[in-house]
Length: 223
Image (cartoon, rainbow, N blue to C red; front, side, top):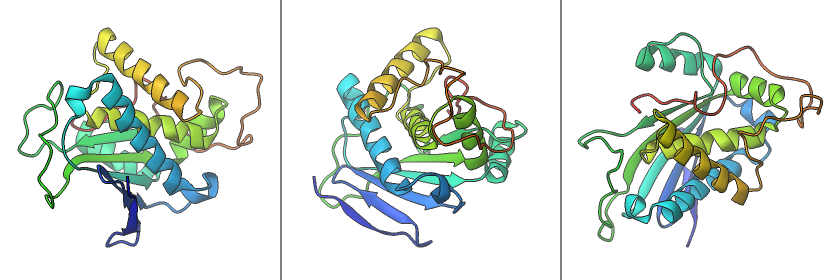
């Protein structure tokens, strides 16, 4: 598929394919100090998530053009969202905000039929990551910041597609899909504990303490 790129009104990257448009907003420029090629990694993560979901459940992902917004923020920004939308204090690693306007509960619902030529894409929603929390978790779990961020992006995107982990069955299905998608990206199973004796791939540095850890504590406003 042909890929296009440009800038949004804020000067941030906006990229996509014929099926999926991805707006990337870097609110906290310090992200780029920790992940080389941040926008490219983010784009690959989301595209792989859509492809993996399509293979797992073709009926739930059949539809026209789609759009998703990714926001790379800091802990303060995510803490404000976490408080405002979830009533919880402090930052979390990632928040997903499905676009539910005018739609019924999306879980189990197929995306709309393919759009006619020239129709605008359907906005799936927004994914917001908190830099300091992600850095701290990556160091604690002996993962690279890029790999940990890739996992969180895939996890958050699956939430936008209606996946959840409120029951054991849902959690098992979502986790297995994440692991399969990440394997295709060359990222190890994030649910297998790392050797605590191994050095962190990004060195000893981390960030200020957050509240959540990756996996089934990753949550989203409105999901």
